[in-house]
View (cartoon, rainbow, N blue to C red):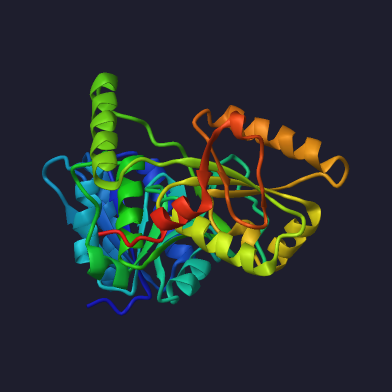
Length: 346
């Protein structure tokens, strides 16, 4: 049983230079965490490097060597099964952490609703000087990120690891966040000192990779259904009750993978911002319309949204919402959407 505040799971396959930099930064900037080093049958130089770090760290490290190549998801699941800390962090060996990177994730993980936690990410450049963030905030996110993310102990005990039958990227991550949501946990993006990263090389045949992605998307859609895009414009005189009801429903829809473009007059935007409703979820984009010629501004914003998403649906039918021209998009009534998104998933 680990007494550490977090177990950091680090899959490693060769690239000893990057791995050394990553480990040195973790040792320096994560003194209360334990490292679970997953050696994916690396060559001798990297293998020796991992042994040296594990020996130096003693009880603060666990080294597991696989004598055959494992996939990323299989490796991560194995590491998760060995972890015992309240927070588990998956990190790629191409990353480098900075001072204070872990504290916001730890603090956020104490929220009983927290499940998947995604730190700020920034490309690793030659100049390692970074302005540190004072304080941090959270917003709900679409999915995690295998570059770096935290998983809380209650979430893992509730739903287990990742689906090894999906791709090791977008669809696997989206599936995990949907499973987390169904179990009552949130996927959160945590602002704070960034985890710096390099792009990971892609191995294997391109056609095989494309086939896996297609099959994974098909399986995801069969499991969770199709996502939709909605656009709505709020009346300048929208009552508080209508705003509350509206955002309760669209937040439920955003958590199920749907996207929303919310067009708001200046006064309404100030109300939303004052209550934090303008940054609830990455799938909800709230745009403030111009104070001058608001109708023209609204229609221009609608055209921009439509250009980005050709199959966008227009939301209407709730007192306090201002309808756009119905011939510009397929219209969906608020009551229809409310019934769809407030029905419990089974």
